[in-house]
Length: 238
Image (tube, rainbow, N blue to C red):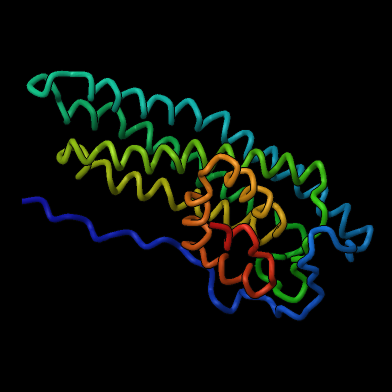
Protein backbone atom coordinates (compact mmCIF):
# COMPACT_ATOMS: atom_id res chain seq x y z
CA UNK A 1 0.00 0.00 0.00
CA UNK A 2 1.40 3.36 -0.95
CA UNK A 3 1.97 5.73 1.93
CA UNK A 4 1.19 9.32 0.94
CA UNK A 5 4.13 11.67 1.15
CA UNK A 6 3.93 14.33 3.90
CA UNK A 7 2.88 17.76 2.67
CA UNK A 8 5.73 19.99 1.58
CA UNK A 9 6.23 23.18 3.52
CA UNK A 10 6.60 26.37 1.56
CA UNK A 11 9.93 28.05 2.29
CA UNK A 12 9.67 31.31 4.17
CA UNK A 13 11.93 34.11 5.21
CA UNK A 14 12.71 34.43 8.89
CA UNK A 15 10.79 37.07 10.81
CA UNK A 16 14.17 38.61 11.70
CA UNK A 17 14.57 39.51 8.04
CA UNK A 18 12.06 42.32 8.54
CA UNK A 19 14.04 45.56 8.39
CA UNK A 20 13.48 48.43 10.79
CA UNK A 21 10.42 50.23 9.39
CA UNK A 22 11.82 53.56 10.48
CA UNK A 23 15.14 53.16 8.68
CA UNK A 24 15.41 55.23 5.52
CA UNK A 25 12.17 54.13 3.89
CA UNK A 26 10.01 56.17 1.57
CA UNK A 27 6.65 54.51 1.15
CA UNK A 28 5.29 57.06 -1.27
CA UNK A 29 6.05 55.88 -4.81
CA UNK A 30 5.54 59.40 -6.00
CA UNK A 31 7.81 60.90 -3.36
CA UNK A 32 11.43 61.93 -3.47
CA UNK A 33 13.86 59.19 -4.44
CA UNK A 34 16.34 59.18 -1.56
CA UNK A 35 18.79 56.75 -3.15
CA UNK A 36 22.28 57.93 -4.01
CA UNK A 37 23.40 57.95 -7.64
CA UNK A 38 25.54 54.92 -6.89
CA UNK A 39 22.52 53.11 -5.42
CA UNK A 40 20.44 53.98 -8.49
CA UNK A 41 23.10 52.61 -10.84
CA UNK A 42 23.48 49.46 -8.72
CA UNK A 43 19.72 48.92 -8.78
CA UNK A 44 19.54 49.56 -12.53
CA UNK A 45 22.22 46.98 -13.27
CA UNK A 46 20.64 44.53 -10.83
CA UNK A 47 17.21 44.90 -12.46
CA UNK A 48 18.76 44.31 -15.89
CA UNK A 49 20.57 41.20 -14.72
CA UNK A 50 17.51 39.78 -12.97
CA UNK A 51 15.39 40.52 -16.04
CA UNK A 52 17.72 38.50 -18.25
CA UNK A 53 17.69 35.58 -15.80
CA UNK A 54 13.91 35.47 -15.52
CA UNK A 55 13.30 36.07 -19.23
CA UNK A 56 15.59 33.12 -19.94
CA UNK A 57 13.62 30.98 -17.48
CA UNK A 58 10.38 32.09 -19.15
CA UNK A 59 11.69 31.11 -22.58
CA UNK A 60 12.48 27.62 -21.28
CA UNK A 61 9.53 27.04 -18.94
CA UNK A 62 6.64 28.48 -20.96
CA UNK A 63 6.77 25.71 -23.62
CA UNK A 64 6.93 23.09 -20.85
CA UNK A 65 3.87 24.58 -19.15
CA UNK A 66 1.96 24.58 -22.43
CA UNK A 67 2.84 20.91 -22.95
CA UNK A 68 1.66 20.03 -19.43
CA UNK A 69 -1.66 21.73 -20.11
CA UNK A 70 -1.96 20.05 -23.51
CA UNK A 71 -1.48 16.55 -22.10
CA UNK A 72 -4.15 17.13 -19.45
CA UNK A 73 -6.56 18.67 -21.97
CA UNK A 74 -6.05 15.69 -24.29
CA UNK A 75 -6.84 13.36 -21.39
CA UNK A 76 -10.07 15.23 -20.72
CA UNK A 77 -11.26 14.79 -24.30
CA UNK A 78 -10.91 11.00 -24.16
CA UNK A 79 -13.73 8.68 -23.21
CA UNK A 80 -13.49 7.60 -19.60
CA UNK A 81 -12.83 3.96 -20.51
CA UNK A 82 -9.94 5.02 -22.78
CA UNK A 83 -8.14 7.19 -20.22
CA UNK A 84 -4.75 5.91 -19.11
CA UNK A 85 -3.63 7.80 -16.01
CA UNK A 86 -0.32 5.96 -15.99
CA UNK A 87 0.41 7.28 -19.47
CA UNK A 88 -0.52 10.80 -18.32
CA UNK A 89 1.98 10.57 -15.47
CA UNK A 90 4.63 9.23 -17.85
CA UNK A 91 4.12 12.19 -20.19
CA UNK A 92 3.91 14.97 -17.60
CA UNK A 93 6.40 13.89 -14.92
CA UNK A 94 9.57 14.68 -16.94
CA UNK A 95 8.12 18.07 -17.97
CA UNK A 96 7.52 19.09 -14.35
CA UNK A 97 10.95 17.83 -13.30
CA UNK A 98 12.63 19.74 -16.12
CA UNK A 99 10.77 22.95 -15.21
CA UNK A 100 11.73 22.53 -11.55
CA UNK A 101 15.39 22.12 -12.49
CA UNK A 102 15.28 25.30 -14.61
CA UNK A 103 13.66 27.31 -11.82
CA UNK A 104 16.04 25.96 -9.19
CA UNK A 105 18.98 27.07 -11.33
CA UNK A 106 17.33 30.45 -11.85
CA UNK A 107 16.76 30.82 -8.11
CA UNK A 108 20.44 30.15 -7.49
CA UNK A 109 21.38 32.73 -10.10
CA UNK A 110 19.01 35.32 -8.57
CA UNK A 111 20.66 34.87 -5.20
CA UNK A 112 24.07 34.99 -6.84
CA UNK A 113 23.14 38.35 -8.37
CA UNK A 114 22.90 39.96 -4.92
CA UNK A 115 25.31 42.91 -5.39
CA UNK A 116 25.95 43.94 -1.79
CA UNK A 117 24.67 41.10 0.37
CA UNK A 118 21.18 42.59 0.55
CA UNK A 119 19.66 39.19 1.27
CA UNK A 120 21.77 38.77 4.40
CA UNK A 121 22.74 42.31 5.39
CA UNK A 122 19.53 43.79 6.77
CA UNK A 123 21.10 47.15 7.57
CA UNK A 124 22.07 47.87 3.96
CA UNK A 125 18.99 46.48 2.25
CA UNK A 126 17.56 49.11 -0.06
CA UNK A 127 13.81 49.03 0.48
CA UNK A 128 12.93 52.58 -0.58
CA UNK A 129 9.87 52.86 -2.78
CA UNK A 130 10.40 55.14 -5.76
CA UNK A 131 9.14 55.81 -9.24
CA UNK A 132 9.71 52.68 -11.30
CA UNK A 133 12.59 52.76 -13.74
CA UNK A 134 12.36 51.18 -17.22
CA UNK A 135 14.64 48.39 -15.99
CA UNK A 136 12.32 47.66 -13.08
CA UNK A 137 9.29 47.73 -15.37
CA UNK A 138 10.98 45.16 -17.61
CA UNK A 139 11.75 42.98 -14.59
CA UNK A 140 8.17 43.28 -13.32
CA UNK A 141 6.81 42.17 -16.68
CA UNK A 142 9.20 39.18 -16.77
CA UNK A 143 8.22 38.19 -13.24
CA UNK A 144 4.53 38.53 -14.10
CA UNK A 145 4.97 36.12 -17.01
CA UNK A 146 6.81 33.63 -14.79
CA UNK A 147 4.15 33.67 -12.08
CA UNK A 148 1.34 33.58 -14.63
CA UNK A 149 2.79 30.70 -16.66
CA UNK A 150 4.32 28.51 -13.96
CA UNK A 151 2.21 29.43 -10.94
CA UNK A 152 -0.93 29.50 -13.07
CA UNK A 153 -0.16 26.10 -14.58
CA UNK A 154 0.48 24.58 -11.14
CA UNK A 155 -2.89 25.73 -9.82
CA UNK A 156 -4.69 24.83 -13.05
CA UNK A 157 -3.14 21.35 -13.16
CA UNK A 158 -3.95 20.62 -9.52
CA UNK A 159 -7.57 21.53 -10.15
CA UNK A 160 -7.82 19.44 -13.32
CA UNK A 161 -6.10 16.43 -11.74
CA UNK A 162 -8.89 16.13 -9.18
CA UNK A 163 -10.66 14.16 -11.92
CA UNK A 164 -7.69 11.78 -12.19
CA UNK A 165 -6.89 10.65 -8.61
CA UNK A 166 -4.23 8.10 -9.54
CA UNK A 167 -2.32 10.64 -11.61
CA UNK A 168 -2.75 13.32 -8.95
CA UNK A 169 -1.22 11.01 -6.33
CA UNK A 170 1.97 10.87 -8.39
CA UNK A 171 1.97 14.36 -9.89
CA UNK A 172 0.65 16.40 -6.95
CA UNK A 173 3.92 16.30 -4.95
CA UNK A 174 5.89 17.16 -8.10
CA UNK A 175 3.70 20.20 -8.71
CA UNK A 176 4.24 21.26 -5.09
CA UNK A 177 7.98 20.87 -5.60
CA UNK A 178 7.81 23.02 -8.74
CA UNK A 179 6.17 25.77 -6.71
CA UNK A 180 9.06 26.01 -4.25
CA UNK A 181 11.74 27.58 -6.50
CA UNK A 182 9.07 29.85 -8.00
CA UNK A 183 8.23 31.09 -4.50
CA UNK A 184 11.91 31.60 -3.71
CA UNK A 185 12.52 33.53 -6.94
CA UNK A 186 9.64 35.90 -6.20
CA UNK A 187 10.85 36.27 -2.62
CA UNK A 188 14.43 36.92 -3.70
CA UNK A 189 13.45 39.59 -6.21
CA UNK A 190 11.09 41.14 -3.66
CA UNK A 191 13.89 41.51 -1.14
CA UNK A 192 16.46 42.74 -3.66
CA UNK A 193 14.20 45.31 -5.31
CA UNK A 194 11.12 45.96 -3.19
CA UNK A 195 9.27 48.16 -5.66
CA UNK A 196 9.20 45.49 -8.36
CA UNK A 197 6.56 43.40 -6.59
CA UNK A 198 4.36 46.48 -6.29
CA UNK A 199 4.56 46.78 -10.08
CA UNK A 200 3.80 43.09 -10.57
CA UNK A 201 0.91 43.36 -8.14
CA UNK A 202 -0.62 46.18 -10.14
CA UNK A 203 -0.16 44.23 -13.39
CA UNK A 204 -1.94 41.24 -11.89
CA UNK A 205 -4.70 43.38 -10.38
CA UNK A 206 -5.52 44.61 -13.86
CA UNK A 207 -5.90 41.00 -15.00
CA UNK A 208 -7.84 39.86 -11.95
CA UNK A 209 -5.01 37.45 -11.08
CA UNK A 210 -3.49 39.22 -8.07
CA UNK A 211 -4.63 36.47 -5.66
CA UNK A 212 -2.07 34.16 -7.28
CA UNK A 213 0.82 36.52 -6.49
CA UNK A 214 -0.55 37.36 -3.04
CA UNK A 215 -0.52 33.66 -2.18
CA UNK A 216 3.12 33.33 -3.20
CA UNK A 217 4.11 36.49 -1.31
CA UNK A 218 2.31 35.27 1.82
CA UNK A 219 4.09 31.90 1.58
CA UNK A 220 7.49 33.62 1.75
CA UNK A 221 6.58 35.98 4.58
CA UNK A 222 7.17 38.97 2.31
CA UNK A 223 3.70 40.29 3.12
CA UNK A 224 4.84 40.93 6.71
CA UNK A 225 8.00 42.64 5.51
CA UNK A 226 6.11 44.85 3.08
CA UNK A 227 3.50 45.83 5.65
CA UNK A 228 6.21 46.80 8.13
CA UNK A 229 7.58 49.19 5.49
CA UNK A 230 4.28 50.59 4.28
CA UNK A 231 4.83 49.08 0.81
CA UNK A 232 1.69 46.96 0.90
CA UNK A 233 -0.91 49.04 -0.96
CA UNK A 234 -1.54 46.36 -3.60
CA UNK A 235 -1.57 43.61 -0.95
CA UNK A 236 -4.47 45.37 0.77
CA UNK A 237 -6.43 45.87 -2.45
CA UNK A 238 -9.60 43.80 -2.73
